[in-house]
Length: 239
Image (cartoon, rainbow, N blue to C red):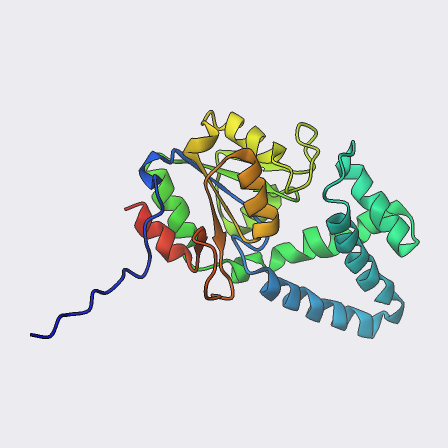
């Protein structure tokens, strides 16, 4: 008699999911498709540059700002909110105020118009499912997230940014996660952090001693067991 091959479940439930009392999400690249958003913003910038050729410097300022932030992520520095614009200023050789204006316009204002169209499928359903399960929801983002959450029509219990005075540390420093868990009044081991970058979000969670999942956007093979492909998978875990 031919033995029937055992079919492995498409998605395995992560260990101790029943003990999770709070879920903390990263924002950029996790709740929405950041690449899709950047394509939309890039098209807006192209149209802007056709009408204002001198605005080409804005593109360089944005590039330098992001690179400077990545480069200085491990620094233990005071007042990150201000210092990030000084890093960008030095890299682009313009005033810190100019960097602030360009970042505010393109990254924090224009982006809001496209966020809803870039939201990953299943995100809103997952938020509703967690609420129905009386599981608290928090945000720990590299940047202030309030306006983005409003644009996505999402509500959370706690919102923490790396640039908040009480955090003042960039990922992968775990301080933001520790602050978020404290505000949620939930032990670190009973929180689940969901992000999109293992080198930032995964490492941040490991340093904090918090369970975590990393969005496998490109659906790579042989990825970490702490990864997931779609939010539909997570929704099933919280049936």
